[in-house]
Length: 447
Image 1 (spheres, rainbow, N blue to C red):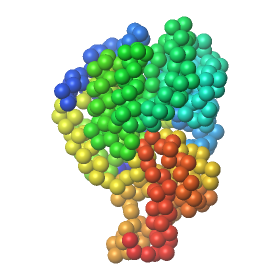
Image 2 (cartoon, helix red, strand yellow):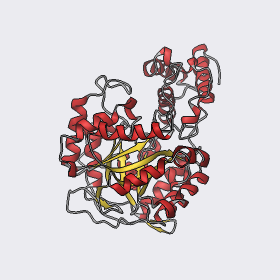
Image 3 (tube, one colour):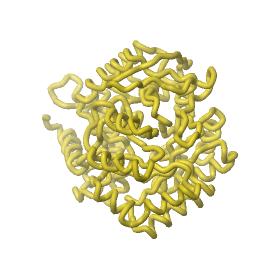
Image 4 (cartoon, rainbow, N blue to C red):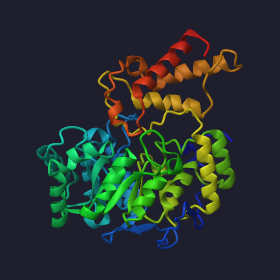
């Protein structure tokens, strides 16, 4: 069976769900909240008593008029998606001041304010890592979120991208008095739940978790999927550890990157074959979303849905929700062990490395390279029977995917992008590797 993309797969499916339970690593992973009724969205209860949809709407990426990643947002399409999501039980919407080129909060304010305020929960962030983190600048960012989102209170407020270092956390939130200010805002009710999102080192995670006794975190957001459960790479920490530490303190979690930047929706063919043999009517992505929602302390699983068929598939996954069985967990763990052997660049397409001042489309470079690796389309030796065909396909696809003035050859290895990468990818080194690979292909050299 060919490894078709998620959109094509979904167009030919009638979706189905059933029921099961799971355990792993000594932690009870069975969902505690039963589905409300057949076909209805699964909800989990927060520490403040909110009934939060297990499917959360991530607002980092939005549909664009021209279909490109950085094009103008298609407001009509975005409003249709948000309206449909709310109509079908989705009530958790996650944005940030830095998302969608700084436009996400304003766009979501327009989309959500058309609905009664009690129909949705807003999550946004203190994104002061991307600029001046003085108290004055941070407070200005905080107050602007209310204006952009057209609201007088924020349901879930996060300290954004915690984890680079303990020193960075202290500078961004403690030494400038910002966290004390936010705690007072929580007391006043303008923040209903206060938490943080994590990308980083175990040392910093343990430090922030240890502050729970003092600050009483309401929730946290972690990168969580069946690959990162036991096989996190780069600067990330296994989500089995993150989950265990937070669940042990009764801190609910929201989930980012359930698809690992799309990698778990577009897996290598030999992996997709195993999953489709087990559940032939389920999309490949549904496996990842079911895993991400199977643990009881997961409050909501975020998905950035820019196509209606993705939204519909995810709604179906989390309606009449079926957690992964023990056998399915074992299968996913075996698959994860296989996948970590693939020579992929661990980019999730978060765009935190962008923009590049020299114009390099960093996520685009990685996306094309990874696509060819996953689909076994790498032209590695002129001795291969398919070398000429693969060589031409790679170079033509490369020029179509990444314009000439945005290709890896433009990278001067300044390194500014590296410090912003949550996956700790050594971006300049990878750019040199891709550029050398492309140049060798153009010259017809051996590898």
